[in-house]
Image 1: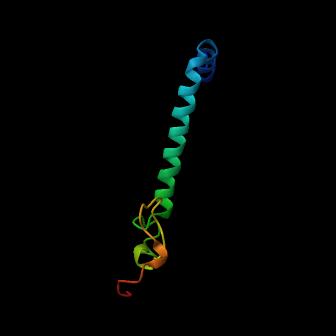
Image 2 (image 1 turned 45 degrees about the vertical axis):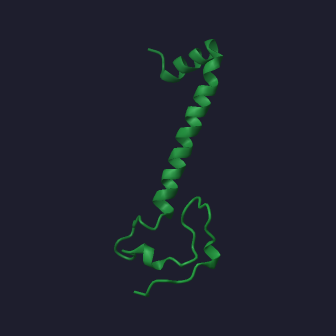
Image 3 (image 1 turned 135 degrees about the vertical axis):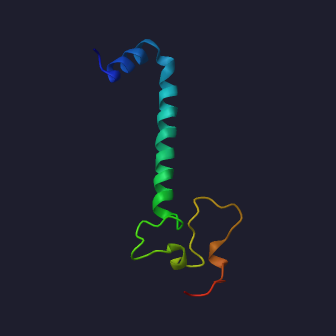
Amino acid sequence: MPSLLGVVAKQLRSHPALIPLFVFIGGGATMSMLYLSRLALKNPDVSWDRKNNPEPWNNMAPNQQYKLFTVNMDYSKLKKDRPDF
């Protein structure tokens, strides 16, 4: 029985119009996995170390940007508006 990679390569050789489809689907899957890993590692709502840092959102500076994209927000001008715990 031929391997899946061999079957895909044979189909791409006989139908070259499928190459952009594979490129865009593969790129989209890669970008979505990179974004999910960024959310898991950089988002303050996710706590990986509950013993030493149970509430990581309290350790963030008021001008620290954690969102990937913000439209009309200048983080350098934000002031601290919450108490210290």
